Image 1 (cartoon, rainbow, N blue to C red):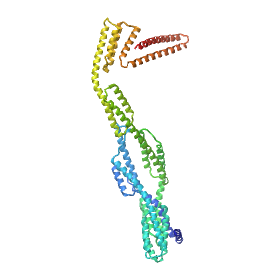
Image 2: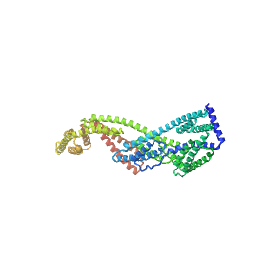
Image 3: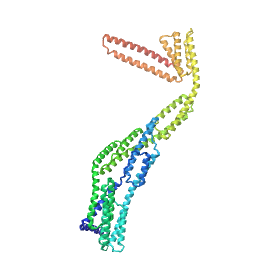
Image 4: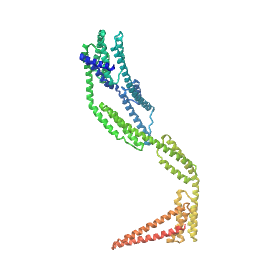
Length: 616
């Protein structure tokens, strides 16, 4: 049955076209108006331009609130994007100034984290709210169009029943009610719009044509429709004088919508009326076409700019770094590219979706990688925090120790480890450092207090050693000089203990001078003197708590000296074989022979020292 109705409606449209070209042209008018709906919706998305460049953050927030309050999310989209760009510019400037202050106060750029203000939080919350509302609005619009489609199909079913049913006294009221309901429903998906209007107009024509009893009423209604459409045409003709092209296009689309909802006019008036309306519409459309033709070259240039920006942004696609500083530098560069993008202007419509998808895809990928880096960094900081806690625990265990030297070495080692830990979470960083420093400071302060008593003892030791040096010199001036007595005085000197660090070299020099004087007066000369002094030195070393280590080191040093001298002797002897017979060669041979003899004598002395060393 439905297929038969649709066939009869198509036949009706065909008959109407054959009977009157005027009716056909009016139908084309409706179709053209429908085809302009997409342009109309595009124009409705635009908003009156406002210069936000001199607005403060507070003014930008108020402007954003005012736009959101309108609820016209498509119209205000461009304005909100412009507000966002200016707000970001202020935000980034404040952030840069905060970083500058942070650096001037001794901070490190790697440690800098910008804290947003309440105004920043309010703005970004409002902006995100807008994006969600806009998305929801578009979804609701599509759902509403589907509902409208369903409602209009129901009206068409009722209209078919009315057209195909028997005439009643209520038919004319019913048809008027259907017209009002149809007009009030609103837009449907564009793919269904043409067929809906074709079916609706065909059924309405059938209704009026099949009911001759209402012909006069129909003619009267057409005359009223003519008056209304003439008023619309007059208003359309006046639009050619409107300077703002966007306002003119919007108003013309509204007039087309109103025109097609009014209904038919007397047949003899249809063609002249349509020609006037068409001419008025074409005048406005031609102005728009001329404007867009003039903008084509600009749009192409903008497209080239945006493709260049996409190429620049693609270089950051696989960026990776291990330092916050490197990420911050690259982020600034990416945001600069974003600013250029937002100010580069519109592109030809057929390329808009593609270039936007590429650019924002690369943009999101960079910040996705950055977020992954900071996520990993947080894990590293947490690990470092645990390491710091462990070092703090060790330092706190050592801070009350009185084993000054060993504990000081351990704490210095802990301090070296602390420097290698790396970044810790910012909120606990100062607390961790304060605890570690407090433990270290406690120990070293205790040691300083203890050293005051130790220094007093060192001063006493210095006086005793000076007395021993004086005794050695006094006895060296006498006649009863013996080796055992000198060894006894040396042992007494070594047994006294430590002296203040600042006096160590001085007292040691006095001691050596006194011993040399005693040995000289003792009458020991040549090799015997060297051996005697070597033995005295070994005796002194033996008094050291680390004597074994020192003696082993000394033995190793002597053996290395012997090895080096033997290697040199071998080398020199090999070189002698290459000298030719000549005065110069003989002179060189003599020099090498002396070197060899001197080295061999030195080896003998060193071997004697080794023999002596084994006695200890």
